[in-house]
Image (cartoon, rainbow, N blue to C red; front, top):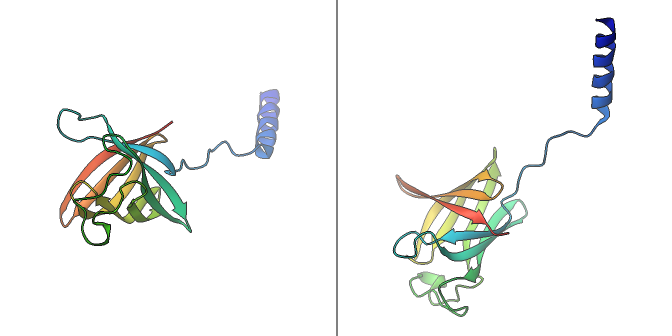
Length: 147
């Protein structure tokens, strides 16, 4: 029994000098695939968005159009986004990380020309749950990391 206790204490001592075994929080930064939500192409990729961080705030811009030409314009957009190129358009902005979630952001639906409140939860390192809200209505969709 005494030998087991000494071995246990030695193990604790050695373990105290090892780096922590916890991985850093996975990041939402990177390129994400957004699926087609309705119709015959449902589930296929409709475009890709790159999420990036600047000064602790997260943004997302369109970096690939799957079903449209690279020079496609946002014909359904309103105000300053009207008839601007979709490629490179900022469609996600002002997300702040709080307690493992990304909140208080905005997302722009370029297909409907509408802006919504947005929050993101990282389900796994390669899957995001995007929740868009307007007043009391919310709708969630899932994005997959592009590898």
